[in-house]
Image 1: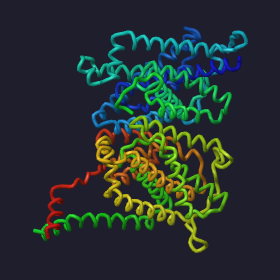
Image 2 (image 1 turned 60 degrees about the horizontal axis):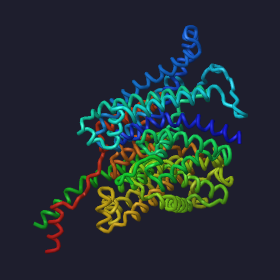
Image 3 (image 1 turned 90 degrees about the vertical axis):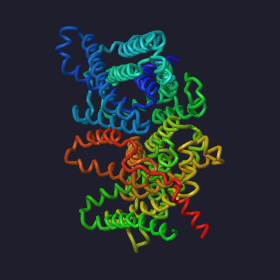
Image 4 (image 1 turned 90 degrees about the horizontal axis):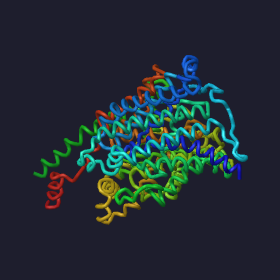
Length: 303
Length: 333
């Protein structure tokens, strides 16, 4: 029983990574009906920026603000820089091709993805990079007989705070209503006086920022990062957003968490080697039986 | 009147024929003037052309988004590799065999999901492609050799009389296959099937209303596309003599997708141009080493900005007024 609980907590940790990345996919898809293939690379880019901050500025910042200070600086620096990168990519790679239809946008997104990935390789080199060890005290908390590390608590707390804030913003504020309206029907939303460009800008700032912070968290959790890891995480996160209903923001959060838990339980109780296969089989089954995802609304024209 | 129309037609066809003849002559002469390295580059151009043609059936002709096409390529390559190394079946026999295996594979896997549309189909194909790759890595029944793959694949041969063992022979092997495929696809484009495919792409509801069984035609496109991709996999496997899962990644599917879109959906010359871009661009920029893929990504973005419809988009040969006149003229006479 305890093992199951521990696996579920591990699953939630990974799931919160997927959920945070999936939010970026689902917001962009909701507003533009575009699968932003570059999103996984925003995540990697953020992870590398966090790595640079932690390795090269650690001594300087730690002396003034302590260990939590340097972590916050890494997270915030990665988030802000990647938000800027997201805006630049939107302006240069996506905006010029919106009008041409969706398929050119897919190619442009793939091009942007290849570009960013190789830019990372050129800047940081093709080898794996390792986050500094023992940055966070490896304290273990024991509840009953279930062990949770401090890092896991930190990751879960931070991601739930971020998701909670986004949920509040999207579901409870006027601007959130504008985002939901745009995702629901862009033309009508524009007729109702919603500034679509503002929504697009918002989506391309917040999505990459969340992705970048996840990158730093993944670096802290696994300690090893590579310039190609964006594909893998991106694909899983994308699966998560489909699982929850693509375009649906709470759906992406739920989908990510469910995916993480399923993946962990699958690898613990069935087979670790086949865990990614389960992920995709679940994805395909969801699409066959409930194409709009777990939280998606029924739409007549899509499937 | 009739004569003038006939001569019109002749003068229209002639420059095209000359153009095609020049291109074929160029392809035949090319390997005799360049080094082995560039023959190999042209060989991979041929592989990508064949893959592009196969995806073009699904994506270009029918408009079905398929981002898992590398899965079929892998099925073809692995069928060839396993049957050749374990059971000694000759490679040339395995060309149709791997095509049939991949076609069956596509039929079985896509029957339950063929009703999905647009992005949903794209996600499913992406998932299926990944499942194939992950399954190959996990070495089911000790057949696929895990991450190392299968090695020791034979050359294509007819007894001792003909062995395809040099870059030059492989170059001709792949380009003859490409030429035959193009000829077949051109016939298909102008057939009842090709028209039905295009109709489904333009307006599926209307196509159904006109009595086209869109489900059957879509499955046919996938089956045919899978078979051609498997042939490419067969030639690739015996050229490299080894197959491993890392040749069939999501990236490979993306490149095929880009070949079709860069060239222009449904356009066969476009596919050739797209394949040339994908296979030659990294070679031309090889001196820039680390930066070449950077330029590659940039080029993809720029291309979509300036020519979103592809480099050589297909002009739909609608039944124009003139050709209608021509037909009635002939019937009257």
